[in-house]
Amino acid sequence: MSKQVVLLDYGSGNIRSAERALQRVGADVTVTADFEAACNADGLLVPGVGAFEACMTGLKAVRGDVVVDRRLTGGRPVLGICVGMQILFSRGIEHGVESEGCEQWPGTVERLQPEDAEPVPHMGWNTVEAPDGSALFKGIEDERFYFVHSYGVRTWELTDTRDSVTPLVTWTTYGGDRFVAAVENGPLSATQFHPEKSGDAGAALLENWVRSL
Image 1 (cartoon, rainbow, N blue to C red):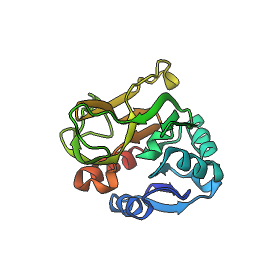
Image 2 (cartoon, rainbow, N blue to C red):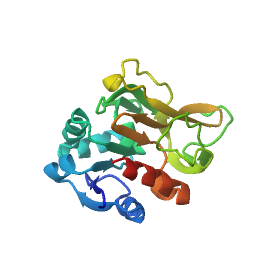
Image 3 (tube, rainbow, N blue to C red):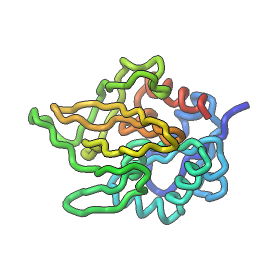
Image 4 (cartoon, helix red, strand yellow):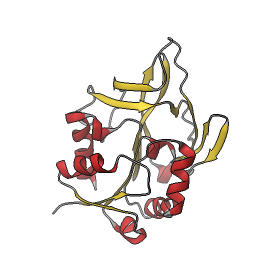
């Protein structure tokens, strides 16, 4: 039986390509902002593109922050992608403006600071440093994934873990600047890169997630 996945439609995100990517790996996908549907699906995918503050405004408008919190309280899986990952952290700082996030993880989303005169945004294919035991990256640890962003989480601040589960943090570097590429923390997972734009490697990652639901 296909897993039921809600792709949260809150006005920010690469909705159609994410929908196709999930369908490609066998998920039964519903694109909606409906509160009950989002709470009750086997899996919830939270996309996100653009500015941190705008994404949070859109998310709160459909009570998406409440959906995420309710699902995680019940141990129900959530996957955030790109800015959909960033808004899971405590705060974002863009152009000197500080905005509150969902506060599922402590930490600050800030502008990348490449040391090697690389341009920002970071746009293109990059490898990642997946930790041992990663379920998301099983079988694709050495693959490349597609990034397009100017901001990221450069310091992992979580000390108290959810339900005594030790988070698995995947890192990558750009121009010598190290930042979080993905997190797996019990039912809550997220990627800074776009799996839906990452070809076969991205499809394999989404398939790993859908199989876990």
